[in-house]
Image 1 (cartoon, rainbow, N blue to C red):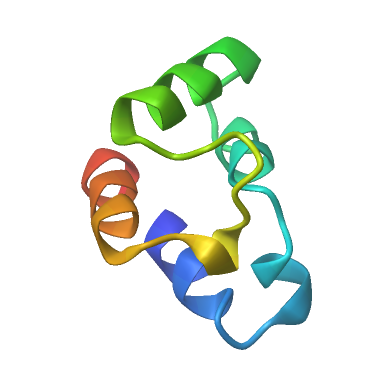
Image 2 (spheres, rainbow, N blue to C red):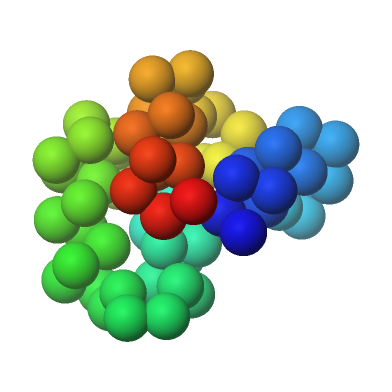
Length: 66
């Protein structure tokens, strides 16, 4: 699940350095346009990496995708 991947980003270097837009695009039913729209809606910069997500951003993504 998305919440497990984000949590693992704190300890796993590869996941922590992964761009959030790439993570969202890897989810089923989410393409480039939808991923960027979600990030804009939540207030996440396109250059943000998984380890750099704030608590409100993480909560918003987990509520949306589980």
